[in-house]
Image (cartoon, rainbow, N blue to C red):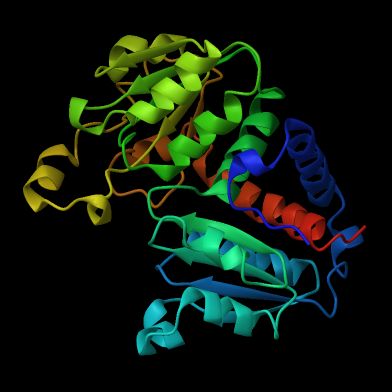
Length: 304
């Protein structure tokens, strides 16, 4: 029995295998329509979510399985004071696999130690979001056909953005990846990412506050929202929330085959005019999320 807590739990070979399965699901959906017949997925979402929860549920249903669970902590026994460990131990009696989101960093790690079924971390605080990273990787692979020899711009909230941290972790294992880190000074990538990953591995990176200056060199532009829920100070949030807004004017000098990504939800950091541009990939990215989660569920349940 295996769980997925962090993207680095997976080797690059395993990631390649998941992407291969996801692509096969896209090409041959009927082949997979009953692969999880009789299986149940429990979605334990102690923190609100739309895309991630529904993506997991759609993934299991399209594999022929069933879904149980809750969409916020208030509708679970956590509201009565039950521990995460007891919750997952109980739910493991009803389900074959668990997808869990929790606002506290490390909660899914504790949960995975106390369940008899595979557990997938569907996001824990500002820490990890491995299935979003798998979603991002599938999107990049379908758009570019590779993970090496690319320049990836990460823009917006790089301090609290768990999707950014996980994507840097994942892509740092491939050759000749250049990261361009675009953010206000208050929201730069945490020092441990710079120190323990980029500097330690000798990976090329650029730190800048200007999106326009670096736009011409980007193969991927990964936009993020400034997350109000991660701020303790409302004044800081208001001051920084509109720091970077991507519009058609800013794309004038971008590559013709730029891939624009966003983990969503979008607030106003990408103008709706950009949605019509063929370089906008963020809604394709949503669809990739369903397919890669289908591949992951099959993998963790050891379904051939």
